[in-house]
Length: 150
Image (tube, rainbow, N blue to C red; front, side, top):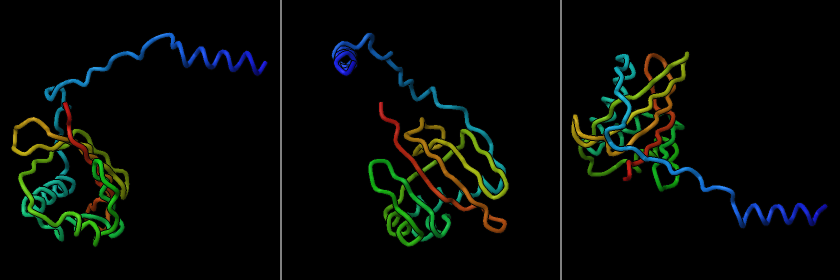
């Protein structure tokens, strides 16, 4: 029996029955439509854009929970406001964020979206923000983003 199972496994690995289907990565024009956010969530994206443009690591870190995470593409996770402040300290630059989807339930929520360097320009990447409401304000619990590569 072991010999038969080994032979079947070798045949399966050596001679796959079919190639996986080819996937189309789509184009920049395939990005989901933007949705409007309620003012308290829109503030999170607006404050993020302003702090980013100014390279203000302290202002960016203040948008996160004390134990928040930044999960950058191709780099280790960054945890906590002090590390986030150091991570985001820098020259800044143009950034336009827009939401594809969002949801809140009690004191937790999320925003899924895209980003570009100019208003109306194609997205150069996408992100997810998980959120936690503290008092009357939404803070970022985690920020994960990655670029669009074609």
